[in-house]
Length: 530
Image 1 (cartoon, rainbow, N blue to C red):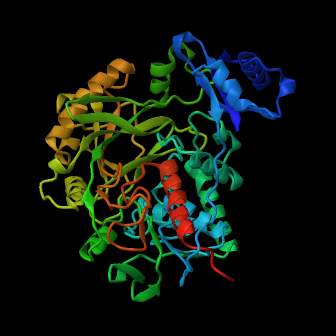
Image 2 (tube, rainbow, N blue to C red; image 1 turned 45 degrees about the vertical axis):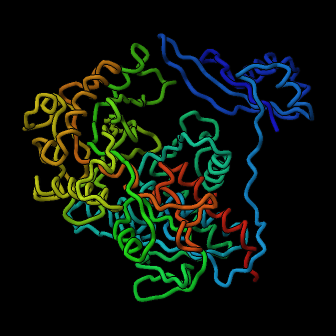
């Protein structure tokens, strides 16, 4: 146990040692009283025309931490308990090794935790390994046919492998630290452990994923690529096997971490009686600005200072029960082609670790819910997404995405050419109007949102900013109900996991859920005997 001293504000030139001394003074301690001291969080505040370091410091004493924190009674000084890594405690015997479906963040960490504790999981991933997946994605960008099983959404690392590698999360779970340190152990920058807004970048994240997969195999696990789940077998409501193409694999424990875009798997499982519920998500478009515009809008006269990272933002407003907000902001990033079905268009965003691209991008999206899905039913959100994605494809007659300047979008007129901001969407864009593929209530709220956001960040609603549509895969359109123990409410042995099952949003929360789902198996069953 340690003492966490937060909200330490120091000049930019201050070093870590000064922050630790300051934390000791606030607690009435001498550094000789400590057994350890370290920086826990480090961020920069560039408001009010100057740059300030804002830090949190961990102090460890031989004893007496609880008494000291209680005596001080300050909000910024509290106890910090170390995360307790899950360990096997179950006594039941497994007849077959556990199976993990999907090698995105949730499946990767579930399999890693199981392998580390002696369960030798079988991991099935419908897409390709990173190296082959990279070649397939590059070929699609160059004009080859879309591979529905290996693309930006599917393959080793999941959709997160082609993202900014953002590790910020609203999930307040001690396992988040375990995730960070596991990523560092496999090649992520050490700075993510202390950064207030940690990110890895697509380029480094892919290497980390491969390293973790290799460790799973070294510990006795098995990973099979290009192996899509096509069904399950049950007896008296209990899982007995899974179907992978023509192969039937006996198993009694399956962690289902298939991601938010595995629509054919959702449909197959729903037809077999696995319960599903429709879930809210958001749709809209990717917006691109010059990164220099965002830097000036947020940093003002400090824009360009070498100590400041490329500026990022988080914007939102609500009107009644509906929200409009920025999502998955990628400083110095690129818009990517994220479709996983033929004759459809989907956008997403990514950055490399350096975040040195000319443009900044994020999604500007509007929340939608089951009340907006005309077809009704548990899978109605999938139909709603498909309608938008296929409408975008029909608009251009190809995988070139509809694209419109913000100035034209606000005036509801088609765009003929780009201005100062050039699109980064790799397949190419079709200038015109994005309104032809999005519902009217979505575009109306986006227009109001852009004007409001322009008042918060100068230049955000500038005429030359670009909107590339559509963004539809913000989160899963379904939820697979599960118990508090994380098991399916209907199928014994099936554990819905991660973002695809409706229980996470982003790399960190998905990874944390993956660890928790592995722990559910470990609480019930003992490790496999050699």
